[in-house]
Amino acid sequence: MIKKFWWIAAFVVGLSLVLMFQYKKYRVAPKADLANLVCNDTTGKPINISSFKGKKVMLCFFATWCGDCMLEMKLLNEVKKTSLKDVEVVTISDEPMNKITAFAQRKQYPYTFLQLPIPFASIDIYAIPVTYLLNAKGEVVYSKVGAINWKDPSVVSFTEETLK
Image (tube, rainbow, N blue to C red; front, side, top):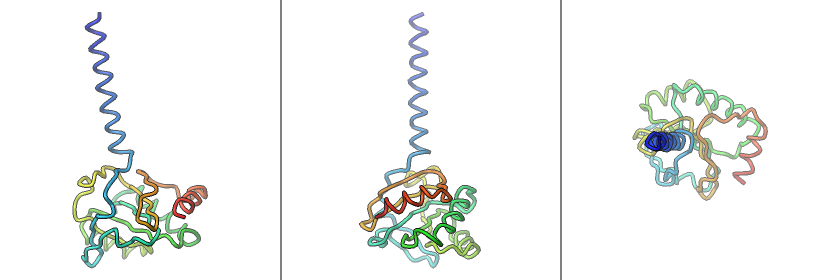
């Protein structure tokens, strides 16, 4: 009986550890060194994320095939017309440049589109969309894994307050 209890306890502890790891991996935005992250713009020119210092920045890691990413971008575009006008939206994908530029041309969103030349997993991003808010000092003041509902006025207010 005691032997069976220890096997069950070991199984529960092991399962808990696996679930905690999975939660952290897929639901918590990684503490990436964004200031030193170098991407390519749509012309292939290297852009260091630190070059946005002095601006309020929303970094959105996305993919052109991601349904949640597309919905979030569409809603954010609608919000940007009335609110968050002083926030620079920088979208980053690890897809081939031709896909990113075709998407940018098709959608005509007023965002900066960048390509990460390494896979997202290299910077510990395993789920998208991932959003980081950077204040004018270039510091991450908020991060979220998963789509953000930009239709919710409280989300817009929270973003404005966080980036003050």
